[in-house]
Length: 64
Image (spheres, rainbow, N blue to C red):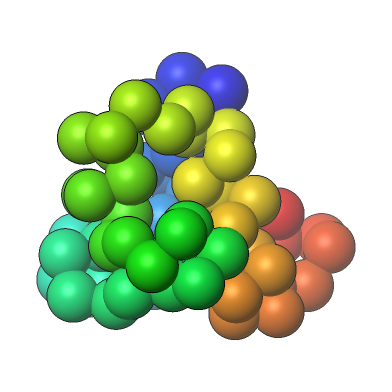
């Protein structure tokens, strides 16, 4: 998954204004106790991170 696709999915789910805030502030065990931005900085792929976000928030399959 390209990073642009990842950010579009984040914006689609959270809204443009909240997606980046969530990515900076929400620590998830699915990302090894990291935020989205920390996971990206640590080298996680966008696909792995999106899966973690979906699992953490129980995002419905049709929105994944």
